[in-house]
Image (tube, rainbow, N blue to C red):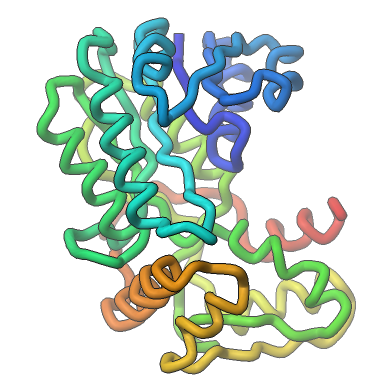
Length: 286
């Protein structure tokens, strides 16, 4: 039985779908069973547990042999770093004594120690915690999610403007959530010796100009990129509803990623879904 945290989100859902298609047993962990009803109908077992209730999460993890670990994103109106670092600690505590034979964690390219770096330092702490405990751990560092562009579909359709926090011509490793789910499934079902860090990327790098071109093709209208200047990043995040603390973390994560050239591997796990295919499907779905 595979225990799947975050099974109603992008990556978790893709993992559940792939596992079920392969005939694997799935136990989906959710705070609200109603949100996972469609997966129950498809054959997954459902268990309610709260990441802020360590005993309930521990009990859920004990029911499986292997588990996918996903640290949920915090509400951006809060201090996201503080909330997400606390939930990382809860995950690590809940693993103790579960008897799991292997875990797979979803992390991020560029994960590194530091403060106020958003996912980069939060997921580094998850990685380090897993390296210190006894359960064999596989870590998938995902590239920039193509789904991060989903929220702009309506505004791009209406106004023909794609807002970007990155330079328009900067190549960025990107990946579709479905490909991350397939990569997670592959490592959940592989041998116990398949551990350590692997990178998961799409078939190619893409720029924000490429994203605009993909939207233009899918929506059959001109689309231009509007880049937020570096010195206005925090203000831009706050205008989107981020708390001051969260805006600082996300702005620093963005600039560190730009300046560091993104974290790369010579032989990443390559997904199949191109940016054009992803945006075409997004535009067709709404």
